[in-house]
Image (cartoon, rainbow, N blue to C red; front, side, top):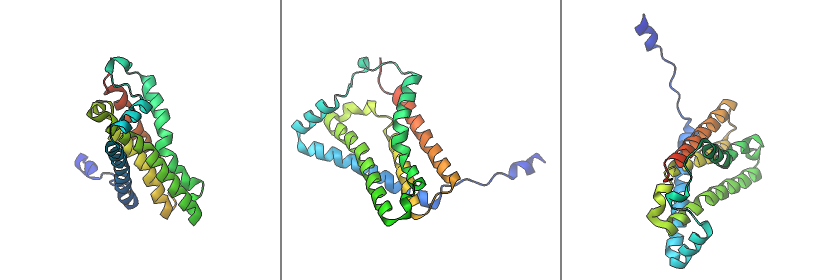
Length: 190
């Protein structure tokens, strides 16, 4: 009897075909933007790299980083979640209902993706491998950022069901939270 109950499992949840198409493309766009920015700064030479270092003033010294705490995680989540998740709202406000709305939303989403990835690429070129220990969360942050972007790409073609929107927001929030924990705990600190 127990075997019969175990064999009747719930149907497998799968990513929608639209998300399976849009998320890899959005991820590729984020990493290409990061790489393009890094290449531009690297090709510009030492003066551009020095300018970026002065502009960013990154503290790459474990002694200067405070011990991790819950407040740090929550602050990162509060900062990063709106950045990653706002494209989910574009369908709610009706940006997908007209050609002009889609074009404007495409521009905003693309600009936001570049605005968030280009500084990281510039920092990678300016600081080099010394920056690596301070960005272990980057793949998860880019995954969250591009999940929001992917949600917009899906909404361009069809409105999301409420359950889909909630699930995509929850997944984005989970990625942001995991990235914040990693960024807080795994970076060098005193």
